[in-house]
Length: 366
Image (cartoon, rainbow, N blue to C red; front, top):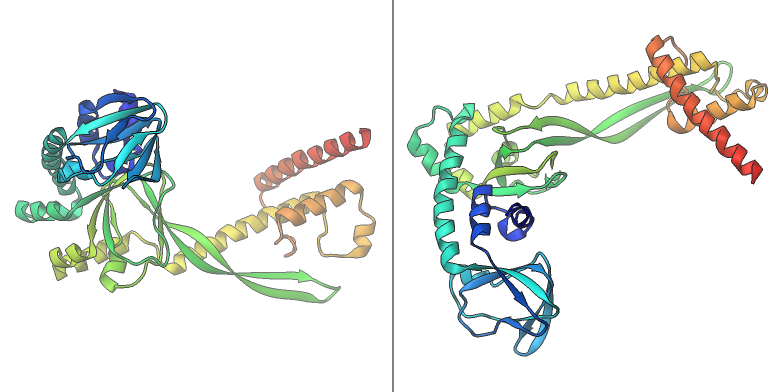
C-alpha cells in the first residue's frame, strides 16, 4: 500500500531504486510478526530472504555473543538476495517485532525486470536532452550501461567545495542549486571628526547561487576534466533523482570531442565571476540606500557626534541602537532614496520600536 511504499523510499536499501521498482518490491513483501526471543535467522543456515524491520528491535548475535542492535527502518540478511550464502550471524527479536520479508526468488525477478525497464526509461529521458538528442541509439545504449541512480532528499548536499571530483551528474527529477564561495570586499567610510574620515576594507566569504539545475541539466564536468577538486557546492532544493557516471567510466566513454562540447555547454550555464561580484555590489548598495533613506526620514545621525547625540530624544536613541545592530554599514553618509524604500524601512522600524516600548512597560509593571 501507499504507506509502506513511502516508508520503503526512506530506507537505505532502496536509495538507488526507481519508484516503479520500489512499488513492485513492496507488493512482494510478506508481513511476519515475532515475539520476544524468537529467531528470524540463525548463523550457518542457508539464506533465502531479507528482513526489513517495520516495528521493533533485533539483536545481532555472532558466535553466541550479541554484537549489535537493529531498530525500525533497518534491514538485515540482504547478502542472501544476491548469493544465497549461509547466514553469518543469528538475528533475534529483543521486543515484539514486525518484519517485512523479501524472498530471494521475488527479488531476482523484480530486479531483472526493473533493471531492464529502468534502463529504457533512462534512455528515453536522456534522448530528450538537447545535448544527446542526435546521438546514435548504440551510443546511447552503451551510455545506459554506465549510468547509476542516486536519490537525494531536500537540503542534501551532493558535493561541497574541496571535494574530489569523481562523478558526472544528470538531473532526472527535482531541482538543485549550485553555489560558490566568493571573496567579496566591503569598503567602509565614516566621519571621525569635522573634517576627518576613517576608511576600512574588509574581505568576507559570501555564499552566492550560481546556477539552478532542473531535470535534463548536467553538471560536474569541469572538475572531472581538469582533475581538480570541486570549486562549488551543490544542494538539493527538493527531493531529486540524479543519473551518475563515475570518473573511470566517464573517461572511457566520452570522446575528446564529447568532453569539449560538454565543457562548452556547462560553461554557458554559469555567470562570470565579475558579473557575480557586480551583483553582490549592487545588492550591498541597494541595502545601503535603504538605510540612508531611513536615516534621512528619521533624521538620525550615526556619525558618532556626541553633541548631537546628547540632544536626541529617547525614541531617537532607540532607533539609533536598532539601526546600528541591524545595519552595521549605516555610517557611510546620507543620500536621497526612493519613497517606497523609506516607507518600508520606517514601517519595519516602527513595528520593532513599538515592541521594544511594550516590553519595557511590562518590565516596569512587574
